[in-house]
Length: 353
Image (cartoon, rainbow, N blue to C red; front, side, top):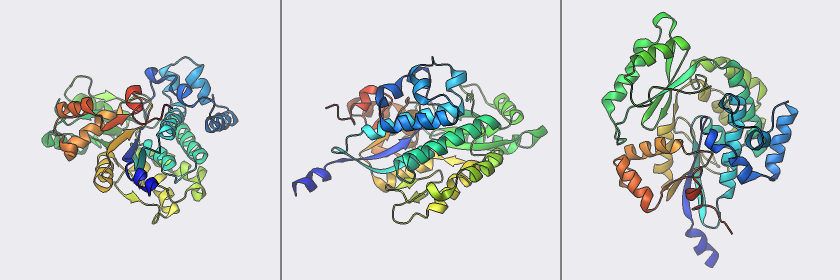
């Protein structure tokens, strides 16, 4: 009875896995600090060597950081996966219960591993392969732009205007332009060079926006049809299984341990997910509403996804949040959104012994 009582006091966590762009200069060395000597990292390094690629340990610990190298999809994607995995494995299970897992864009692949739908090594092969395919084709690109105000409060009219730009510009003089990711208080646009150029010309400058994302292809748009076809031939469905934990995908669909068809999960992951918009905001909303977590946790590396998550939580009114100031006040008193890429927040979850 005492064990049951103790277990019932564990805090409930929703894990939100990060996507591309979260491993930068400041994150170099993170993997070495948190996972050096682990058996799973040794296996990942061996798989990289077999492919003639630099190992993750070399990239993170020996090769000086260069965005032109470390930011490549075939290097950044597995580095981000390994850093996130190290963080999740470090969460103290005596104090915390992971009740559901979701992710942003490439973070969906990480979620498959964290949720148990793919073994660690199979998830690595998926992520390494997709990073390679995206890098070698690098078809199109992405631009990010906010639709909330400086207090992260929703501005629906601005959102409607931004979405209308897609309809206006797509098809003009060879322009291709699509919604790529609905990312909290921001929209990520994907398109070809002509489409992105026209978009940037139309968007009013706002601090650092519009922001062109470095070495990103037009993820989650029809421009990835070729990558989709190649991925489905290289990555069979046999590695997929039912998850151990509930997963929420880029449409807000819930995949449960007791009802998941593994082949359907593979078909979504290497099908619709690649060529249609990824609705991260809806995925997060479903996660919070369905599982009522005590805290939301973003594994590392980095903490860049924290703003988008906070913006989505403000839209939802989670914990009474209605502005950036309210979110910051909550975080100062007791962080309910924990970015494990921030060491002082990571310590909330990790048993330091």
